[in-house]
Image (tube, rainbow, N blue to C red; front, side, top):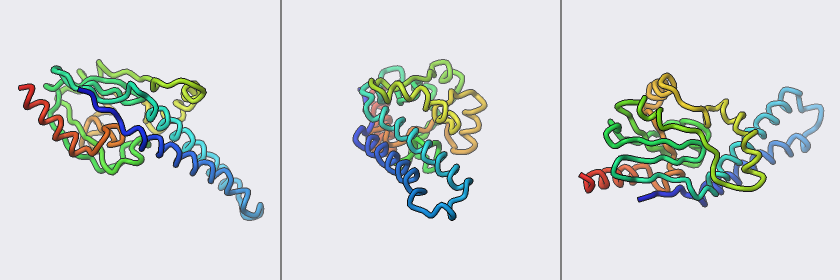
Length: 200
């Protein structure tokens, strides 16, 4: 069984990010030059760059037909756009709802699925960074944009120390935004519980 992300919502978030980025770029031109400080102009350029970069990330995931979460008898295969990993059923200690912000890819999600692991090292062995399966100029440009996103740890490869820090901050080792689950985090937990029950 495979659950796909909410592709239309991901693309809508991308368009919203681009609109905000464009507005930030255009807005200084509407102001008087005397009232626009150099610091404000620099801040606006940085914000616009971040919003455009995040928009590209969402657009690529929103068009990535290989993205999603696959269930099998051994566990969950998480193909989440910027990363792919595997979580064995026996490695899941707890599942829950995370309401706290984790990174920029949580935009547009009211909550996230939280997973606490019994053995983070086993999860890390399966983890790999990847680019969304998409073609065209955006897919090529994301290699450059990825460096900017790394500053927000959107695409940063996890370590045991980073997972421990995430657990202290969010209460979970892995957090997956609802937009990448194709529905609510609560419904996804019920789906996992039902699948594990039927599997047993």
